[in-house]
Image (cartoon, rainbow, N blue to C red; front, side, top):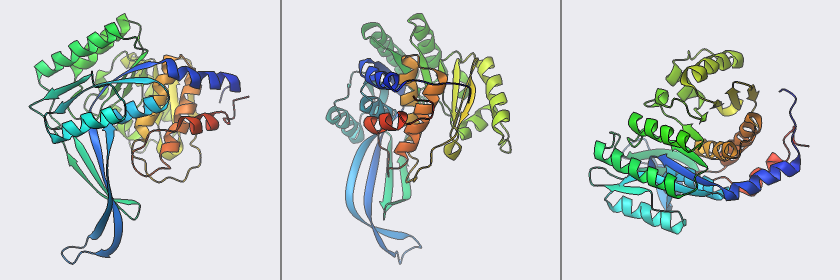
Length: 338
């Protein structure tokens, strides 16, 4: 890594400044449902384990988990999405209320169901996931309604950063992306993206673009045999310039992260962890990276703190938001923090 150092006091100030930020999150929301239980035998009906359920739980998921992470970091999240007019949609609104999250950006559609991902966990290991979802794009009138709502929020609230949290469930489309990016530029608001394959190449001109390595390979048709960090950096540089993106942050799972901008191209290795579950790590990384971007932190510092945060939530079973105090404690131990 190029010579880079930062004082501990500055790190503390950054974490304190998170509390002053308003974050607009646009993306697919869902309920993460859990059935927790014990496995003591195999079913006589099929070669599958029998889970004796001991506990049931429902959590906010998808873009709503990003909102939970933003809230856990001390900032104020405003979630913009579409849910169904169904029992699950009602449950989703109740969960928002319980978590003291704003409901003003949520539209209800009679043409869609609310996405629910049910995870069945036996003996602390995930055995099965069942998805109830609608993946087709929202209709034209719903896109228009959403754009009107987003425009109103941007014009009436002090928005410090916008996050696109794309789960390929039909909320985000090319028109929505281009209009929001155009509006954000006119207001000088940075835009950060956690992409999926479908809209991967539609995020032109955004501030920060955060794919994982699998999404990057699919999005830019990068050969699966390309493992060399320098080769990946070259491919990312080319893509970044073509898309007019300011910074690309790629998560590499156990290999850490790479950050790539006009001035900085660095690889930060992962920290040794006891990995329990990788679910939701990407949500945490984009949350931390976006807050750092709103505060105009350096690319290296943004990548380093984001890298730490993704590892921390992987130590927990299920989708959970990051612990701010724990993240600050680890950030203060980074090698370049003096």
